[in-house]
Amino acid sequence: MALLSDDRLFPAAPAQRELARGLYEHIKDAPIVSPHGHTDPRWFAEDTAFEDAAKLFITPDHYVFRMLHSQGIALEDLGVPRADGGAVETDPRKIWRRFAQNYHLFAGTPSRMWIDHALQDVFGVEQRLSANTADTAFDAINEKLDSPAFRPRALFERFNIDLLATTESALDDLAHHRAIRDSGWRGRVITTYRPDAVIDPDFEGFLGNVEAFCAHGGGCVTWDSYLAAHHARRAMFAAHGATATDHGHPTANTASLSQAEAAGLFSEVMTGRASPDRRELFRAQMLTEMARMSVADGLVMQIHAGSQRNHSDWVLARFGRDKGYDIPQRTDYVTALRPLLQEFGRAEGFHLILFTLDETAYTRELAPLAGVYPCLFLGPPWWFHDSYEGMMRFRRSVTETAGFYNLAGFNDDTRALCFDPRALGDVARRVDAAHLAELIVTGRLDESEAGDLMQDLTTGLARRAYKL
Image (cartoon, rainbow, N blue to C red; front, side):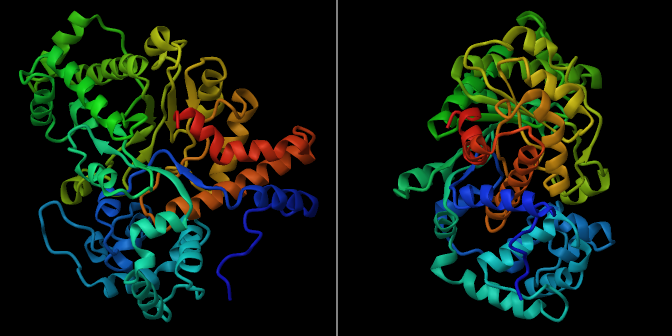
């Protein structure tokens, strides 16, 4: 029995459902454009087999293990590495069994739909995961992973991925991206410039990071060499395909200090004794500096705000960053972004994509801002609200004010190759079809224009926003 309904996520009303089916059929086989994600470029550089089902589906993906952890299952028992190198479960079959025994916890969640999609569509497993089916599914997946057809490059091509962007630290040497480029493989995997480690004074190892980083700007640790290092690294990333930068700040605050004031603040921060308010001011000024550089070099700028990252100090100390403890919080954009927008809001060619987890900001702040400033695009909140209800809330909240063409299109925030771009992409396409069908039957959209709009939502808007 199939795990997934052919009509999943389509409207219940027959006429509306039929419209949604037709719109979905129009684009269901369109190529995947994934302009922002976190897959490992090593996969495509080395093109070696994925190790096993547990390391593919569970251990690296906080969207999966956070649910299990919320029910009291220790991260160690799921094979999540500890920061101190302490003991964790290493038997992939035991990890998979624990996952399968608790698969009912995912009922009604988007993760359940993605995983079912990958099991059925990618691996041909059509039995629901449970304690009774765990070993059968584990063996079937592992058998396929051993075959050349399931190597990273083969899956990339099978999934019809036109472009996949990864995200690397400003300190990364981009060796894997060079290896991909030099291999002659035709798959388009590009990098994205993520300078949080050298911009955020609260980032672990910040002072040492900046000292190493400044070597790219002349060696000495000064404001001028620091800015020069950013220019040099951005140019290097662009040479390796980057079209965008990405900034994961706790707020969207920006500032407009003079260069003399900024230089003094930099020196203060580099003492390691700056107050929390001064550290926040430095992050704010650096967003404005990054905008200034984007106006000059053309790289698209992305801001991910609205998340209190690594909410649990205990988990951060024991397991490190990005372990499912990023929690939405109230976020100001109107006041916070004003210094940056006063200077660059109408700059020709400047693209600034705003992401948020704060749903209360959609209608009140983000849609009106994107609906008037030429530089602004709204990125979808799929990196957290990646569900039917979350996607619909976003569409209904922002489209009436910002329209469709001030949006950045589809973005899957890919982490797991086997189900993020393909499964989440399918969810997004079905939701968009359902939304457009609703607009048609309520007289807000002509059926004759819906097909072109569906294509733009699938690939066209992302290509435009990210300059692809």
